[in-house]
Every structure is written in structure tokens, then in C-alpha cells.
Length: 75
View 1 (cartoon, rainbow, N blue to C red):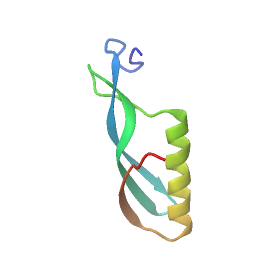
View 2 (spheres, rainbow, N blue to C red):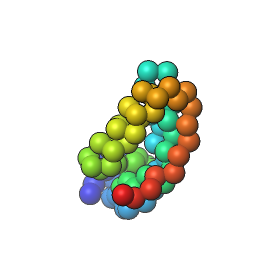
View 3 (tube, one colour):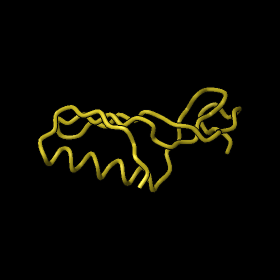
View 4 (cartoon, helix red, strand yellow):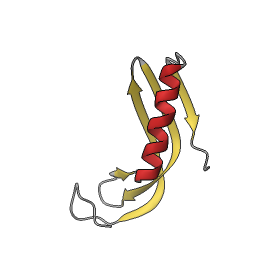
């Protein structure tokens, strides 16, 4: 797909590091599947993956986690 940020680059499959903050919890998830712009580096995470990341952040916040670093594991 064409990058919506720089409007010049095309995206390619890759991996991103996503940081989420919620209710005093900071969750860092590495190796998240994403489309990455070859021109500017903008990262696009798909809807299904985003739902999963947000669910993990909510569970971490509910259990009182303050800081956690995880590696994304495909379901």
C-alpha cells in the first residue's frame, strides 16, 4: 500500500515495536507484525493485531502491571 504519511513510499511486511500506556501501565511489545514504509519508516499495524494488543494492555492494567516488555507471539 502507499504510505499515507509521506505519500511517496510503499509499505512492506516487517516487525514493529509498539508501546502502549493505559491507567499507569506501560506495555512494550516487540516484533509486532506490521507494514512499514520503505521511505519514511511509518509503521501500520493491522486491525486484528491492534485489537489483540489493546486487549493485552487492558489485562495488564487490570492486574496492576506498571511496566512490562513482551515479544509478540502469533496466536
